[in-house]
Image (cartoon, rainbow, N blue to C red; front, side, top):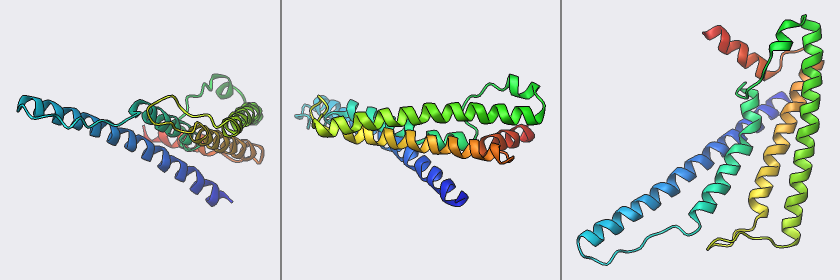
Length: 183
């Protein structure tokens, strides 16, 4: 089970990275198109007028995918900002229980966010909602990716809470400890 979860988190991180790479590629293509147009005008040749329609929307949706798909893997890597002033001042057993309680609250919030996002996605499907740009993009696509990212994040939070309750060290704490030891 541990290996499957780690692969799931890693796969989502790779998709997040791919989303960022696609944003960069689209912007680069648009910039190159503008450079070619300016060069053509300078040479008094009709510019080809290369543009990527709905570039801003594609970029925004890819950014949403990158952020939400990266949540679970970033948690596992200890990359989320956490304030641990209270937990560090407690004895280990109390710190563990407080950590599990906080993780439980985070699970509840993550589950609520996932459920709300799923309902919004289903509404967009039911009403055939599309974007307003030049290219009509079904809104259910980016919303489904967002829902998937939130659901994976909730699973990662459940994973951390279960690890704490079993007496283990969650991946995000282990990653932070490793980082602190490396300094």
